Image (cartoon, rainbow over all chains, first blue to last red; front, side, top):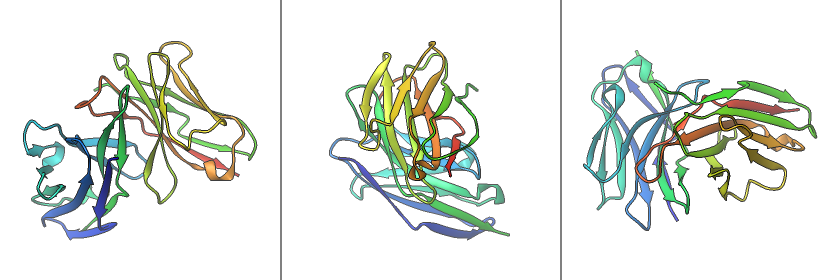
Length: 115
Length: 114
């Protein structure tokens, strides 16, 4: 069965600093991995996804994530934090069903950006 | 950009009442899902729907829950007799295909059972 662990329920960075949100996965088959962002009182927005085409994946708003099979990790980074990045971030792994895919989410990491 | 639309955005209901949460998925998508997020907890899979029938459901999705696609555009989640523990944010999602396709989520319905 697939699962995701996000290390750190809260991360605080200064504006302009590097953002690093950690995600480790467990999967018995080659995984598809996703990062979603949830702004206050809004839905889940796809940031980026790994689908085995390239290990370094670029997403929206200058976020990127690197798939490392040896470390079973898919950490999310952004070189320079902006105040508008304050949100909750969810890592998810896709679990194949007979029809469709089920997303298994991590517990989420709340990112706080200090001015 | 195409969106998944959910209504209402907030719903307050009395315990024991029936509620229907509504969703309009993206028109060319084939797979439809409901997820929920209890405050402070993980986003959890409830049910998937394909070809006009449930394709998989979680252990959470018991007999009090049902889904249907009554008219080819709307996708509804019905909770027959709400309990306090049903209070959560409910997200509808749709996807064009399987595997590498990500979902598009709606903005959610916050259900409060009192």
